[in-house]
Length: 142
Image (cartoon, rainbow, N blue to C red; front, top):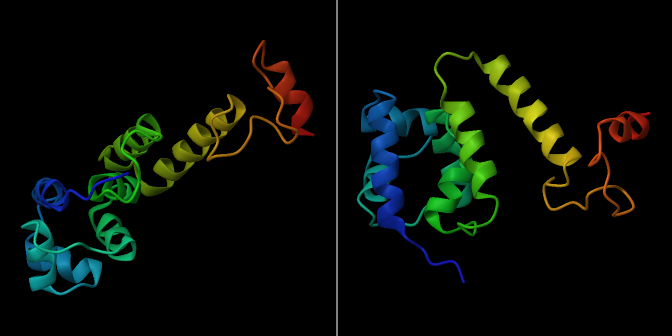
C-alpha cells in the first residue's frame, strides 16, 4: 500500500520552485491555484489532487509522474527509472520544449521495443520482439 508523504512532496515542490526561481505567488498563478493553498501544500498541510499536481508540474516544467510518486499516488518502486529519466529530460534547461518532447518520444519507443511500455505486453501478441537484434523491430514496424 502506498502511503501518503505530503511533507516530502512539499519539500520537493519548494526545492523545485526555488530552482525555477519562482516565488510562491508566481507558481500559484502559473498553476492556477491559490497562493494560500500552494503554501499549505509546500508545508505538508494539504493533500493535492492529481490534477493540481499536474498543473503545478506543468508550471514548473517537471514530470507530473515525479510529483505523483512523491505524493504517494504512484507506487514509488513502479517505473522509478522511467520517472526519473523523464524528469531529468524535462528539467534540462539546455533543451527547448520541442527537443524535450522528441527525446521523450524516442525514449518511450525504445522502452516499448525492449518490452517496458506503459503496462503493455512486449508485443501485440505478448511475445518478445527485437531482443536478439533490431531486425525484428524493423520487420514488425510495417
